Image 1 (cartoon, helix red, strand yellow):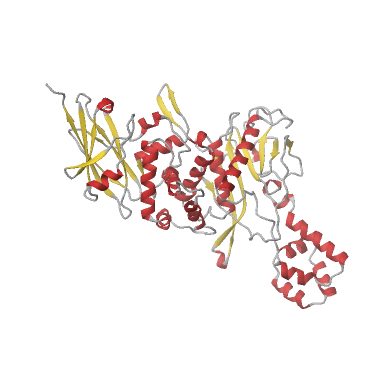
Image 2 (cartoon, one colour):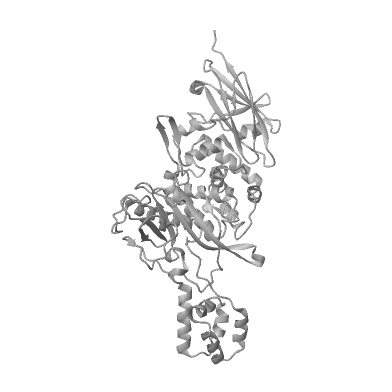
Length: 514
């Protein structure tokens, strides 16, 4: 889901270490000394549960709008949804690290102080003079200053100082490295995850079940780059079950923020790879459901992404197009142990204050490589109803949503569609159902018949229909059980990496004999 983008921090020095985090087993009621995230304050009385990596916040005020199911009014027990969210979060963290991504963290290391003029003076001064100068900084500033020095320079600055004073300065340094609760959003460097049962935080809703904020600071020459400062997640949690795929999606935004790729990434990369990660981390939940109700069938979750991708997908388009790209990102690394191409795309925008366009990201991936992955994704998703990795399987009923709203070709009226560059378009081929065979002819002034045959995907209930070259066209013969369906969607992933293509779909129907 959307990421709020600000950001910040200095590079992690070898000296700096993370604050140790012990796994929590019971809820803790937030007290006056706790640093409570801004969004958690809107819930009511906040409680928290700590894992090694995450701090989960929820309201235990019984009856409050933002309180989760199972709240007891005193943080004495941990509601089921909190336990479930903690498990999903740690599972996502392990998945991310297994893919070669860094450990998630909610805050950058504490700030250091750089005083180059003072350093030059200290390096020329006697030990006693250095002690006087360092004492003049005050304990906290002195610790931040020492933490900001290169290790070799710090050794020289402290050389010759008496043991007692050195130990005092070392204690200041340790405090600066560890930080204080007030240095961090949420009180420590764990990732803060706020559970909102109703949208009372103003951050989430049924349409937007999760949101990640990312705070950065400008850095580098002329402040043209950014560095990570802190991040926080809010998820909608109206029931006892954790919103697993939505949470995994948001936690990948945390990884993007941690690695300073959030600001520089266009939605095609930021949202597409967050969906890619949700599918890898939580395949069963990501698949979504096909629900039958009074108004007909509806899709949810990743199933809606499949229907959108296979019907029409323009990777540089607006709206939700970027989310539908997740299958292409999967296909780029299908068969590889590590997602090297996805990681390379993310690294290409690391630290950028102003990032490239979606088109520039595709060019950086390689337009021919993107076209091949697009084809692989179309075969897997539209025909097989499986992710390119095979780890997400979609309900067969999703096929009925592919092509809805696309132009419909009939034996009387052919249809022409424009397939966007680097994208997908589709057309419905429809016949009366009274014949014994239908023939779908697909032609293009931009593609030869053999190229069309290799590109076309025609999903049907008993498996994809085959295309062959005949009379200079790509031809799909429909007979047997498929003829009774009355229609088939012809999905065209653009095989040309250089431009959009025009494709015409025509239908011929053979009448029964006699």
